[in-house]
Length: 311
Image 1 (cartoon, rainbow, N blue to C red):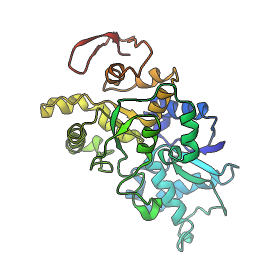
Image 2: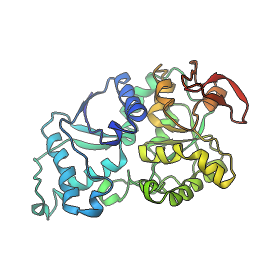
Image 3: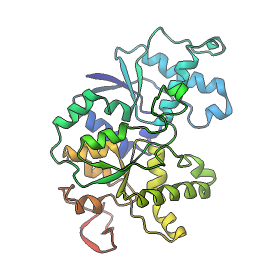
Image 4: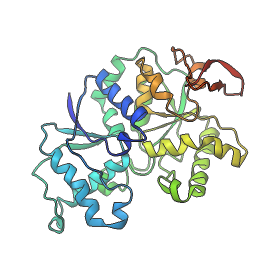
């Protein structure tokens, strides 16, 4: 299987060492040959569509025009914000007002896939199931989609925008348990973390509280911005609200790699801020030694010292 691949800025930057590498590693395992869109540019997320509508369409449209010159029928887009902008541009540049924009699309271009939706396809799930070596038994999680991958439905074409199922299907195929909860598509605040972190902390704390209330042990995401907001500031939010959540925040691609025992998964998980290892060790889901070149010791879920070290 061969697909095109639009990484977007984040997967070349802050999410390069965990989301990007885990996605590429899993694709290689599943014999999915991904070819990066050549000379791609920023899609305009998140500021362009607020500041200059025409620029936001033309920026994303240029990427679609380049992808149209490739031979692949599908294009994987791991970033939900990029996915949203590309889907929007595709619809606008094929619409009644396409003459308002500088970009003229070719007659065809690859189908634009949100990464989680692509992996939830029946044929891909069968590939995953065939390679599982360590089912994620006893792992209880909530799937968090954020607000960009499925909305607005008139642009994304999503039919389950109120209750997405793609990550749930992947986790179920891996042998884990997904718990239904009401905040699947609530906003985490996204880039407001730069200008109004207090708002983001309130939104994220609400997500933590509900995840724990329904009995989840971890949160699974498909968005690097959601992962960053939930993962990076957990200790600060715990201190401000006087709570102890200890909730790992995993990319669904990392959990596929874990169940399939890709040895590189440890390197990807060590890039997280909130310790992702104690839960996996408690459930006997992580078979490798954890080392910490920075000398940072690991605390268990209840604060006890652990025999391993977190890098």
